[in-house]
Length: 88
Image 1 (spheres, helix red, strand yellow):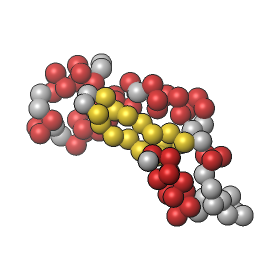
Image 2: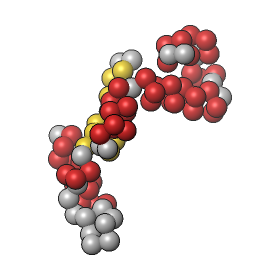
Image 3: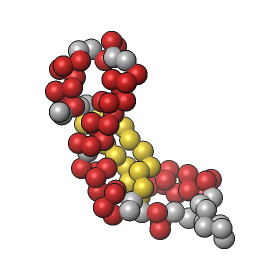
């Protein structure tokens, strides 16, 4: 089932249950070539937004995130600054 078929079968989203909304989100994610690309390449999703009927996904290479601390964890503030620069 495609996202369009789901919407057609379930009617207005204002009547959907929580399970319907979650099911629709999974369909959209499965149909998104950008999200499939993240699994193949190891990129990170740094944002999603709707543009008309299309979901636009912003990706980044985790190696490009700055501010990694010695433990291997990413400094959240530094990562946020990096992401903000990329989407401007």
